[in-house]
Structures are given as C-alpha cells and as structure tokens.
Amino acid sequence: MVRWITKHGFALNINTDLSYFNFIVPCGITGRGVTSMSQVLGKQLALEDVSAVLLEQCREVFGLDVVRCTVDELNDYNK
Image (tube, one colour):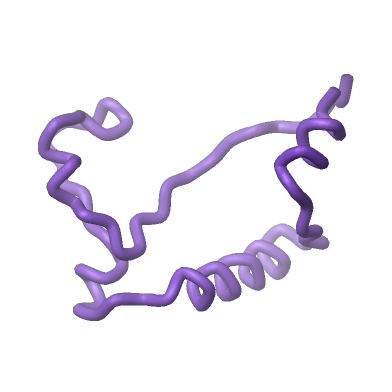
C-alpha cells in the first residue's frame, strides 16, 4: 500500500452544459451559481488546449513532474 499520498480532485467546467446543475446542489453549497470557462470567455474551448495549460501550471506551482499513465497503471501503483 502506498502511504503519504493525498487524493483530492477538482472540477473544471470548460464547455459544460450547466443546465444539469439545476437538479443538484454542487458541493453542498447553496445560494451560489455554477459557471464554465466557455460561459465566462464567451467561446468554446478545446479540451486539449486547457489541459496543456493546466498541466504546465501544476508543474510550475507545485514543482511537479507530470507523468502520463493509463488508469490500469495508476491502479496497479496504488495496490
């Protein structure tokens, strides 16, 4: 078992259909809306472009080496 690894995630709404959020309370937060990058910027965005910038920022901010792997490789690592 791998220790000292924190697993946490975040949601980044890029070109998301926000109408689905009318049926849930995201993260248990009431009285607040949900938005997306495309809504704020007024245009659709390519997932590949957003992903590239996000990975670069994670490398820079957290001092990480980002390694691509498959889900199976990740699952094997966590055993």
